[in-house]
Length: 193
Image 1 (tube, rainbow, N blue to C red):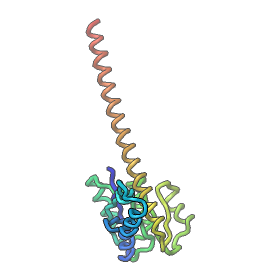
Image 2: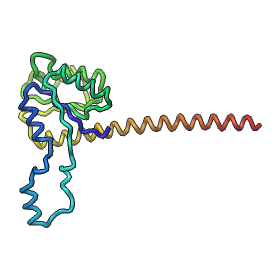
Image 3: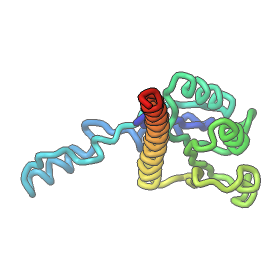
């Protein structure tokens, strides 16, 4: 997979823009600071690491829309690594109900709840969704560094999980091939007796 595909689910367009500003790197970001550092310390041969972190951001404005987008992405083999989910999105499904529906089919999808309100307490959320290592909470207004670190950490975790699943599948195939080869050799030995 090695996907940095992130779905932002919020009914407020300006929140989508905030995420784009925070998570999208541009070639000009920090240019003046880099020029100053180059003049003080000499030109660096390598680009800063953050310039190599690129996300593909997609937007949904309602829970139902998010469910359709996730289903479509999964069916096309282009899964989202991470979903940033608002809680309050009238008039349709709220974020907690949307997460519950997502996890019915995709229980390991990484999700960050983003909310400014306390419609649900933490206890309510855990009672509805169950305890999960795939859920974090980011309070609005959120800190850019926190959002960036969550995106980085959770997309990397999703990549590792995908890589491990592929490794397990490969090991299963290798084991099946070994079993077939052993059976073939046993048959050949039996025929030579």
